[in-house]
Length: 410
Ligand SMILES: Nc1ncnc2c1ncn2[C@@H]1O[C@H](COP(=O)(O)OP(=O)(O)O)[C@@H](O)[C@H]1O
Ligand SMILES: [Mg+2]
Image (cartoon, rainbow, N blue to C red):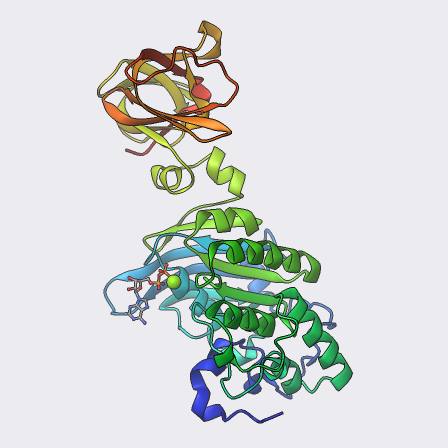
């Protein structure tokens, strides 16, 4: 194998897997065989003492980051990631996802707060000692090495036996569907193929923690969806802990055990895909995850979980009181929870509506209505439902159950 000129390819080196970097071939007491070594025991009594409730694999504690000394791009971040979990950081561009990942990897220093990895505080540990595999936004391979040499590299620096290297490289190439491309150089591959090589290289040495920052962004839709499922299966098979960054909610929902929704440097909600969709805790999450109808109003009464809301441009309705601390509220209701022309016992709330548009989408009809002052109210009507009365211009009623209508921050 051609020895890579380390100094000359600093960026690719950074970008392919911290553990796989030549610097991590250390003579430290930890076994170089990360694939078979038993999980290290919790070693820091102080760390354990600060976290009495659980032993998360990764923990961020009151983490803060500013680049310019004035504005915080990560604000008081607290997050526990379980061993073996697939955790996704999902949020709009600029919400602090990459910054958080870079702090975990060790390429950015926290301004304040703590990071624990397997019970050990790592804020001051250099990246190459963290034993983390990484795939960055922009794939970066060693250009002068073949695909085989690129993928073998993390195993070569660990001085694994040739037979093991050959077998693991072959398996990794199969996993990313690139068998047969071993002897090409990166320049002879498409962007998508290069990124798959980067994936193979980050995974081939089976690190216990793998970080991925929008690794599929450069791939076309079909390949991206295939790779999502493959990475998910790989995660299940290898039992590694995965921290994955994306701005694509479908990708997050497909792959993750739990999703941390980021906005403006804060985690807005940490939950399963189903939890985020069915039980958003604030208006940002309700709007960011899936489709959502919004109606504004004033809280005029409350009885336990249930509140009465006077809509700004409509009647009084009842809703589930979720996040109201003041008079103003924004109601959130999913399009598939609304019934058109409901019977009296199908819905607690009945509002008059006018059909503005109908789109046939095979398995359902997407109906846009004017309701309570908005003409962007969407209802999904499953195909096969009788909708004889439905026509553009028709005046109908819409209704829903109060528990499906969440009263959130205005
Ligand atoms: N190296 C940097 N120097 C200064 N500002 C940065 C740097 N990296 C990111 N930022 C800023 O920090 C904020 C969060 O960025 P980032 O973590 O990249 O968000 P995301 O990955 O969610 O898109 C943005 O406002 C971005 O402009
Ligand atoms: Mg980013």
